[in-house]
Length: 334
Picture 1 (cartoon, rainbow, N blue to C red):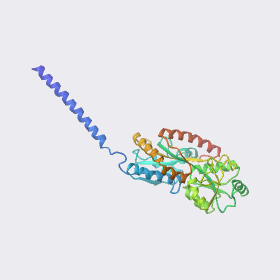
Picture 2: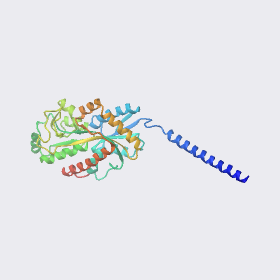
Picture 3: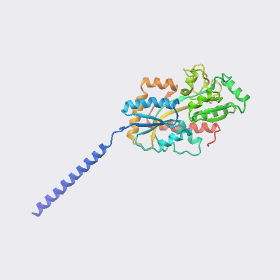
Picture 4: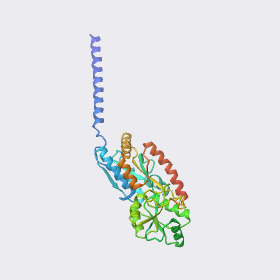
């Protein structure tokens, strides 16, 4: 009797254990599946530059396609100023849940760490690369009121008017390129910082500045509209939309080779499945013929899509490149 009783007791305990395990598994499954699929609400896309900048132009085109791809709004939030500090810090401190993204450039991710002694964010540790979008080139531009039509004439003017010259910049690449140009031609001009590139164009057109180094995206409409003059471009070949404008090498300023990337990031710690989904979507978007034409027509650069690992390696090389360029230009960290 005892023998049968023990067997029944053991069997009862085994069944109870199995039922408890099944119940725990069911609860775990329910909990996991209770989490809403990403994205289940609007996604904020923070930018460090204002409307009209290359980053803004590209970001809006990409955000529109992401909205179509995922069925949720991807809302642009321009947090302008402080050389990108405001935007970068906002992203770095955002919850890593996939609902805050960052579309930015060299300024925040590879240049600032060599231009400033202290940053309110870590450009490497605080972000997860999602993917590069494109690379754009720059131009040396002057107001149409300036009595110069070539780089050589501008250099002569700068040397003949010491203390009367200035160049404006709204992004780090323009700052570094301007300083590098002056050092290469052995001329001087006051460096004037702005919150964003479109403001630089306004003052350049108005004659408050002698020259600037805008991205092709920012400067091209003013060149075509006859409000600015382009003296050279930073691309290896002439820009097809400005075929009469020489390259830096042709203008005998071979060091004028500035370029910058635009890419997408998320706060560090964002779940890997979300990073991968965004990367796959980004690659799909950048393969669309209409997207290629739209971005290429405004930015006149080249596409550099790839995996998150590809982008991380690109960033590593870019940091080394700009560290050397900043040192060569003689720019001291503030």
